[in-house]
Image 1: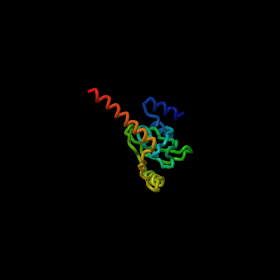
Image 2: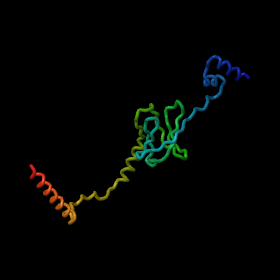
Image 3: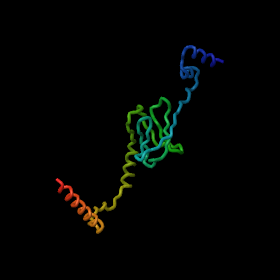
Length: 156
């Protein structure tokens, strides 16, 4: 009964729920967490609210879940199984900035260098002379051009 009176007086005085809870000895309410599904790019980046955040290269082209508490300063990126694999400081919306974890950068470099082809370089193309059909077609074009020139230059 005392708690109800405290709450009623707090509401009448214009206090917030958190300050009322603090006065009556209750914990603050649990924060609201926003979760969104995103797809990681080939460069192991996840786009979120106008910025890009890194994930390990093993998750390139995978679907991940981005979570953040309302009013929070960090985002968590988790696998579909719910394992948090990255935490980044949340940037202002729409900056088009890229936030990379140094561990993700090193792992991406290692993966890229491992996938690079270390074989023989591509050989140059060889010049192949024209075949008999191409030579015959070229001769016919030359004859047609000569006939056209003789008809059109004789009239002038």
